[in-house]
Length: 73
Image (cartoon, rainbow, N blue to C red; front, side):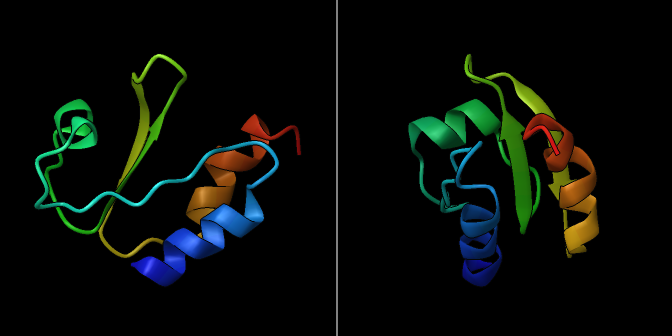
């Protein structure tokens, strides 16, 4: 999962903040996201509301379909 997160950080660095959260760590992110599976990816807005979720093995195009419009591409 780390390579995916690093790839997202690099690709979307100019328009999104990307953080990796440990599924098993009881942190503020865990409370906000309430993870259901692993691997899991969640897109949150500035208020912390979940806009979109991905579960399992995700193709890069699936991220692009959602994230590129948000980045103005």
